[in-house]
Length: 262
Image: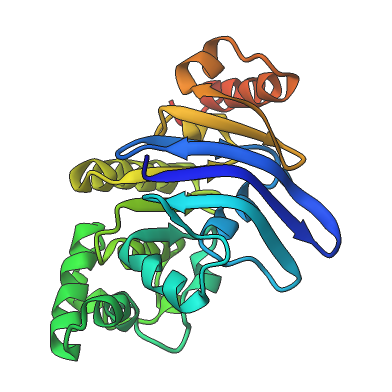
């Protein structure tokens, strides 16, 4: 197993917001964490990478290739982030630095993790921009985040996360802020990149219709607890819990409405 999460607990300001979450992500697997807002799915992802907000603490076990991550010093976790595990956040506008060109931001992780020169990192940044299908990559890397569209900013965020070819990508609601057409393009891009690089994927969403485009297995969360998990095909055809049944009704409505994902 690449990633093993066991009895993960996150406490925030005295409240238990993630309560005993367990799941596995084998090599090459595509696993979805799904639930309504406040279900604990994003905090679970942040706990895996040691990125919890101030006032939050994690306990339990998160093992990456047998190495325990809970309690690991931040300097060692920082080495893992980007190098072995990449993350794409929901809103790239807040994840990107507004005063640095996007090329410099893509190249930064290459310089940090691979020791590349500034010139080599700049060259690689152009290649990574092309890889995520940004138009005119030689010119777009010279721009700042505010000069790009929402879909282009998300492609930059994906390029940053994957520049060092991590073995696991965590994508936290990466299409929520995008319109349906751009959303479909980003999902297609992620599918292609994950398959091409042989990565594992943890995809976080509240939308079962979106998850059906990228994952094969799902873990359903509610109020910080796992209430159902298994192959996505089973959850789509025979959901056991009322929460999953509600997510399926919402997904069905999305898929069948004009302009839906299907």
